Length: 398
Ligand code: PCP
Image (tube, rainbow, N blue to C red):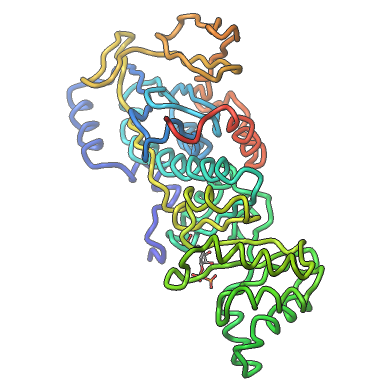
């Protein structure tokens, strides 16, 4: 019985999550006694939506898988900025020892890196404004921890799912759903007072350290709801959330300016504005001067995947690659000052950067026959690693 239609860890480790042509390839090569030592590297030749850079994520899971195999692995540390054509991971070993794991390996890196990169782009667009991952409900729940970990590493300030909060070590964040206001409208027999009464109850029942964020678009005009709930909760109101339905959204910025004006006019300068519903980079850039926080759902959890591929580039020490790929083992050197990279044949020294900086190698030994050679930082540490790099990369490739 498989209540959730997902593969188990055991099935992944047994190589069952594999495209059948890998299994047949193993059969043919084994039958012909061909099992050379190869190097295979993971690169993306381009990135979605003309992204000039990506954030590598999913590496911890990839290492958990690869450490069950007799292979050597070099990789960029998780949370590292990468660019097209840079090998972010390289496997060295007998081809038959890892052939069937290509499908699962790429799946672990492609999806998580897409989400982490989108989160980092939203982070950059938002500046010091809050960005919270609200997208778990758009994806299969078996993926929630991966999705929200990648969103957090990429730079989100928090995630909405309880279990993700425990997994990441950063308590789950949220406001209130429309359902709370709707049920209160029934409970008190009034739609007019439902938001205020629901928030008063929230304030009375929920632990004081939880920010009081009132959802103000359920029944009435956001401006008047904001004033009413601010008058009801006063200094205990952290903010108001506008999830205004698209049919009523019109000029969202003007609605927010109006709410801000009316709140400030009445001394509620402390009440922050939080928006959600269809939020992506353009909305963040347009509203960040006015809004204190963004709830990003679909555009984060359904971020485009990074089109990583794994290709053999060396067989028994001889450089060889398919058309369209560069053969041979490589090194990637990055200048910490100008943040520019060079990809060179492995063993080529490239310390000195034209900017005067001293480059360092970023494709580092990670695994040797089951031994993990690098620390696997916590999500918090990985997030800090990403935040430290973001000032050095542009939002657009122009
Ligand atoms: C949605 C819910 C999600 C937000 C919006 C993500 O509001 O709050 O977290 O939206 P997105 O996928 O468009 O970015 P509703 O669907 O109105 O749900 P609720 O009443 O539960 O807040």
